[in-house]
Length: 242
Image (cartoon, rainbow, N blue to C red; front, side, top):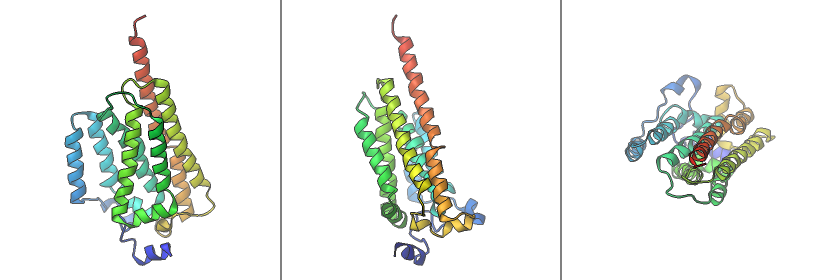
């Protein structure tokens, strides 16, 4: 029933949709005026730091570049989009707007994990992709929960070991979700039932590719920010009087 509704509607409810074919993808830049105004406002708010501007640039890649349209077609592209939000833009925002004091990361880890997994439940995912309002709720909650988690992890004075374990846990839960998607015996998302065929992918192979991206390449930003935490910890250790 859900799949028939999406097909009958021509995927018109997709933000940046309908799904493009390969010949049209490079022409599919998203110049939504409200989105552009929001990005400019965010750049003004975060523009005092390079990490803030980098975060805005990452969000522009996710929402303005052809990646936005491609994520309407391919689940694997949507995974890249989500990884950019929760593992790249969110920690950059956290660095641009650092917490004033250390705080417990565990509750925020649980919240951000629950949000990520909940939006990848098939019914929740398909509903969000087909409804503009719910789509933006998905984006806001993914980015907001991840930014709160990263602000706790990257807070000045946060013990290095605790921060490192939190980052490792965040990657492991994403990797586990990716593994489940990779080894699922059938495609789970009705919204991506037909568009992958235009890209010479079956819905299942597209889903498997998305799972592998979550499972392996997504570890790169977690490793990078883990290295940053370790470097800061090393500098604090060296600065202590002997």
